[in-house]
Length: 251
Image (cartoon, rainbow, N blue to C red; front, top):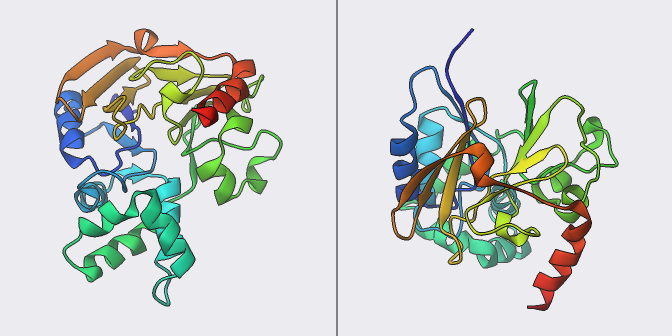
């Protein structure tokens, strides 16, 4: 049995330099397993480099909502104009700008098509956004797995009895009681998207769950920190999730 670590990395959003600094901090060994939770692309300046790095190193990656947006925009027949507009508005313009050729972009699109929407590691279950609490796994769609928020975050009981769900998608400080850079833990799930692209945070996070270690790099000031998992995590109150969301929508 491998003694290597299992490292889970939150939403990179095109911040290649920050990702390289994070890898320097993690210093992965040959028997470590690296998992990306999706949203490799959009908003940051070097989406092409991020995708190339993950693809060329054959790291495991699941599909995020931003990869989903790209696939809806860049269809086999060319582009789908309404979906293209939605993607560009959601940060896709920076992704397009990071490519030197259309062929390279389409090569990466074809690779993105192969990404799974979820992954079962036995004791850990990966999805970008979460899972619909009212549906069995067999009925979960890409929409739920890549886009769900409040219905999942406000669960009062874990979805799985014997698995921790690790997600990205929702920046942790948008959840009740969570500060920028902190991870958020709910009922049976752990959110590690600490908002690398967001000006209120800048933290890109990698988590070694087996050894309870958190590695973080701030993409804006290049600071690096390593924390024990229990010091990096804030438990959230499911009953306050919808209240917090309504407050944010009014700001």
